[in-house]
Image (cartoon, rainbow, N blue to C red):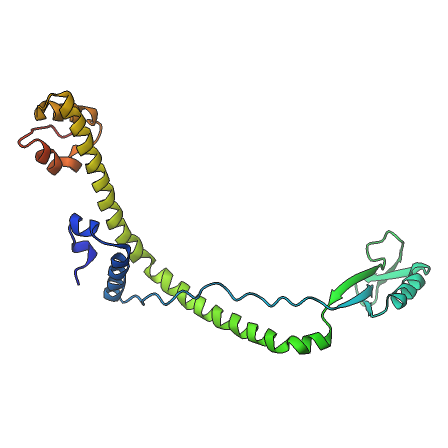
Length: 224
């Protein structure tokens, strides 16, 4: 297989994206870079299990019944609580907790998954967990291979980009020459004079072959 760096411009321009990717694989093979494995796709979606149980939290205690939580809250709310802080095992400082204190207990409502629901959905949860683990491994391998070939991919596509940009510039040069040729009543030298003057700020060696194609024998001075 011919390497992309050994192709002339016409060969590069004839390449399809599929052919370019195959040439990139060929360059990777030459450089000892692993081929890109199939993309692992999107990460498996986490299982969405709606909590089926409401619990009530007061401080560090959780309650099934809101009545129990409220009773505990009432006791705490009507009591003088003390928060104990200490700088050492032997020196402790106690401070009174007021109703606006940051740790003053409140009744909080929390939605959780009951043990029965967890048991019911355990198989599905385990299946998703395994799928996520397998996806993580495949994604790591893919990313490592992608990173290893990134330089080769960039260089190959740079060859393609330069060829396509040169073709586009030449097409514009031809189109501009055709317009100047009409203004010059068909005189190719005059038309080329117009064109080179309009583009004298550029290095026309980029179009040297094209200039001779459009106006054989035309002599122009290379911009310094």
